[in-house]
Image (cartoon, rainbow, N blue to C red; front, top):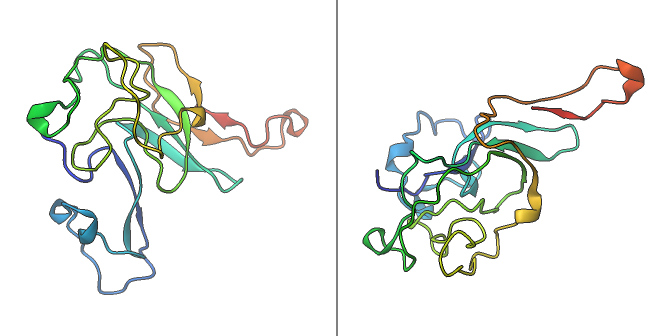
Length: 171
């Protein structure tokens, strides 16, 4: 399937601040101008499949991202509007990431400028530079064993164990 403007996006809805704005049909969003600031916003994009995410008590957003595997297909290339080669990156490990507004997670999307290089570009031969300044690999906090599907997460909030686990992310 072709990528769309909201492919691999984390969206933010303000359901209380915009009476009369709903229902909202996201299928009609094809560019930034179609978003509704303060109501329906693109928080971050380039996160292939954040199966679960949570706002932590520290105010940060964390996501478990299911990375591509051997059946996920090729990266976009010239036929899709990218000046990068289309490659099969193979199976990559899922990961836990801290996401901030405006971040690019590394999943290519030719519907956005500067979003044609997968992750840090080292999967290409020869390696490509990641041109997007909003790509932050240092925010990937943990990589899971390949083949493991990360299907949930929660913040530990119980005072059990003398409070030693308070704030830990259980994934």
